[in-house]
Image 1 (spheres, rainbow, N blue to C red):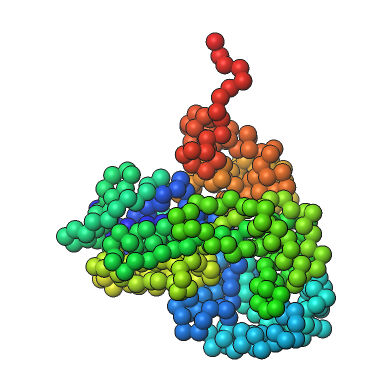
Image 2: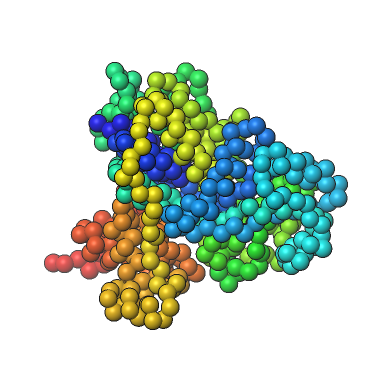
Length: 478
């Protein structure tokens, strides 16, 4: 029986798992999907917020600032992509200056370092493509960008390295309090643990309401996005937000750590029962298209390579809910934006709560380092030639758009937890994330998955059960 069960393998659940792996404890993460990073974490703005926006005194503000401060060193320890590129909140009318000053003052109270208001001349020097209507901006040098997949996989792999177990395709159907702990009922049988941590994203209200009379309702808040080709990577350098004002809230325009440009999101509240409604809509994408030009001019939307939508776990009180709810049941709920930015601090806070409940001791064998998937493109010509000579798989390019090799894909499959689907490979290596969106490389990736996992190709999926890719053959064998 594990000491601790964490429900949910998004960035919060994996951050908690990694922090608890520092302790002498048996930890199990259960996840309803086929892999980590399959819910809210997989589709967001990829922003590390500086922390000026959340209400002063809120848990959201506290953990955002702490998480942002932790992120640079964590990126070095766990070898994932992170860039402290800074952020700008652009004011488009002099009438809105009081709101800009208020945002600045709130950020100072929250403890955000280096904040200052810059005027148009400096703003244009920093961002030549800023709107002609831009008057001034709040500049936050500690704002950053990150790969949400890379961060989550890094946390999960390091947790696994230190003994945490993962159980996928496991849907929690009920919770029963038992002597000395909890029985977690799932579609794969019952599990028992002394402590249960609820990090279930948009399903956190469902899990919470299984044990508490103080009901919680999570509203899935959909955000639609455009992702632009890497040829647009220099259009903006900072993450550019629009100050809410008479022009509305606007959408962000930002570079990504891989050189693309991301534009979005909308904020469309869905019915609380629609926790899988990640389809984009014409109305949502039209809103992004209309608003993105308010703060940034000439956004190259002709270079869109894909669009997507994600769901944020919004709760009406607009704060994180973290704490022991009932006798060893711990909530980590309503983790909406800036949840990604706050994840390292969330992990520490929840691990601290669990440590106090169980009286856990430090594990002296804990190793907090992790090495990411080797990218041959980062090597010199001589180093790459040596690598290919030692392992020819690194000389076979599978994804032409992103120049991803067979060696990288094999590495992604055999990691723990490793890729089992096309999306699992895609998020770990970027095979299929380029301009053709997997049109060329998908069959080859399927062949590699079939070979390395020793399964039938008919069993290979896009993203787990129900997304099988082969539905029949065009020439059946007699």
